[in-house]
Amino acid sequence: MISKKLTEEIIGSAIEVHQELGPGLLESSYERCLVHELTLRGIKAERQKIQPIYYKGLEIDEGYRIDILVEDKIVLELKAVDSLNNVHKAQLLTYLKLSGCTLGYLINFNVLLLKDGLIRVANNFKD
Image 1 (cartoon, rainbow, N blue to C red):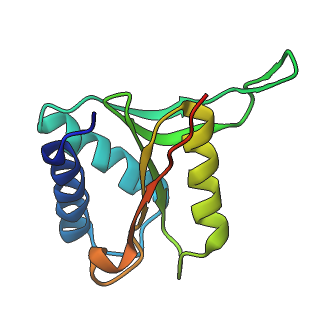
Image 2 (cartoon, rainbow, N blue to C red):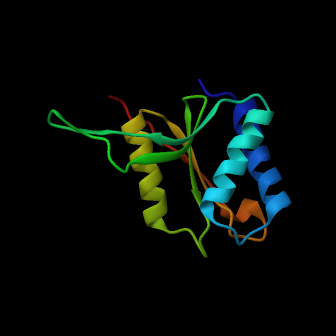
């Protein structure tokens, strides 16, 4: 079960980073700062978490990484782009499916107000 408090802390952390840094930086800068902010709040957050793909007995683990995995439950896919599109949401849904997580956030830091770059994605994937 994912608590409302945890999701509020994630969103609050992202807002804090965005307010402090503003738009226009590289995605990797926001990623490092967001992990730091979550850690300061006592929340476990892993950067660039390797996410293997399993296909008919084959494991592929090269190049597939979750930007941030929070408390082993929530996937954060960060962007610093002009606008989010369906491919970004599809990417997050794929990471949710592969990881077995049911909740993720697509966060675009290249906006004036972070609320305009935040999309919550739920996946009811069952193994």
